[in-house]
Image 1: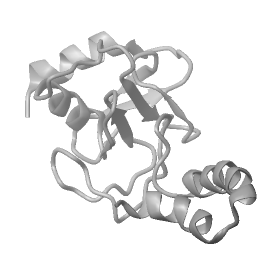
Image 2: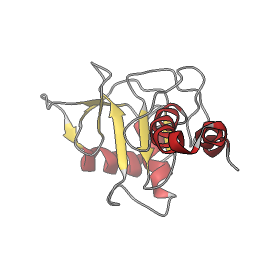
Image 3: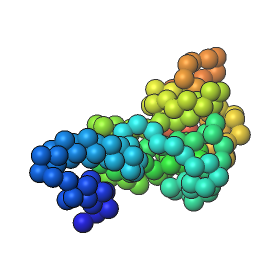
Length: 157
């Protein structure tokens, strides 16, 4: 029996029959919400402790962090958009996969934005040297995800 399931049903074993229904729903929901990562949306990164899923470097710079969640999978974290792109190329899914969640940190504000809809500034010094920073809104000199991806793939690494 998994720990989560045990924690959900343990109080029910000692409660009277009339209380089991009330306890089961409320307690299970309360405990279930506190244990583990959420099943959608970006997760908290443990800065200077979590490592990049591709290169193994510690994720330290909040301005370049990336997260990818494939349907039914845990979140893969990256320190640079280039690592995320090359990691995706080795998976059975792509950025086109339905329900794939793909976030990049906004370079200026740190908020999580969909990487496929972000606008990218070239020439920013990034942790792995791919030199792209994401922005939530377009500015002069920004490019769209497909062009940024093509430049990274053409460069290789």
